[in-house]
Amino acid sequence: MTKLFLAVLFLIIGTIIVLNKSNGTPTERRINIVGYLCWVVSAILLLMSVVITVPAGHVKVATLFGKVQDNNYREGLHIVNPLLAFTAFDLRQKTHLETAGIPAEDKLITKMDVSVQYRTVGEMAPDILRNTGTTEALIQVHMIPKLRSILREQGKGVAVSQDFFKEAVQRQLQETLQLGLAEFLAPKGLQIETILIRDVQLPEVIRTAITETKKREQEVLKQQAELERFATEQDQKVKQAESELKAAKLEAQKIKELADAEAYKINVINKTLAQSPNYIELKRVEQWNGVLPVYAGGENIPMIDLRKTGKN
Image 1 (cartoon, rainbow, N blue to C red):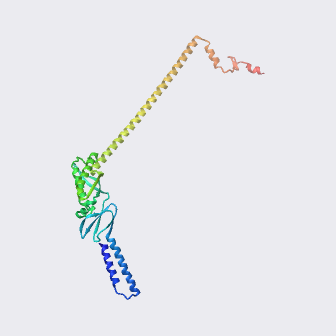
Image 2 (image 1 turned 180 degrees about the vertical axis):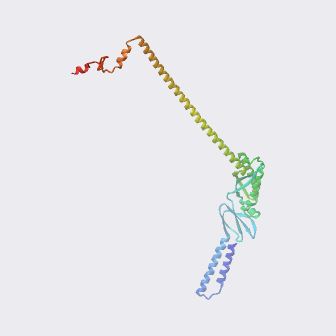
Image 3 (image 1 turned 30 degrees about the vertical axis):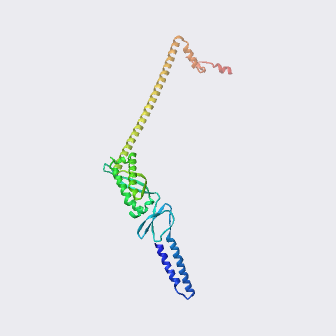
């Protein structure tokens, strides 16, 4: 509409300038050129107002003086009534992220992040424009309230909040959301493709209790590890003491055996002495260092060292 209005405005201005009587002076001829340029601009704007392009993955819905037209315009180039106004709808896949509080039977509120993947149904774009306005308005008016309502209803069947972490509970919740949203939003122009549960946040009181429980478990594990370490050290000490005791016994056994051997030796010697009177003389000879005494006897009679005499 704006382009059409400008086209008509430039056409009127150009016509006034060109039809104005002139004497043919250079200034007036330049003014006529401006009028012709206004006609050219008017023609370009008029052409632009009757031709529209729709980008890939979109449709456009036309309205004529506020009335929604039933047909829509798919991607590509179209020649249209210049009096029409257009609203574009994106048909590509989108994702809506929603965080909702779900009360379980224990009356505690669990926060859950849910992703809803959807796309706008192009054939129903005129109805969306007529009944809701835009896809964003459709999400705010219909999808979000229905999503939260289903989540609250499903929470009534969960005994305790911790059960929201169970795979079976999450699977059932996804299937119920998928079916409920698809049936509710399909007549309104939204196609639900996938429901994903992204995160589950338990109530603060449960998170605190779980944290305290984990701390106690860690303390118990720490104490068990300390007891195991102490038991290992005591086992090592016992084994060391046993080794030392065994070594002492072996050393005592060795000493005893050596003592028995020495006693046996002395016993043999005694028996030998009793049987051989010359044994003492033999021991004296074995202990003699080979040096002859210079003096011998009680009267200090000098003895001659024969070895020294032989040398002279």
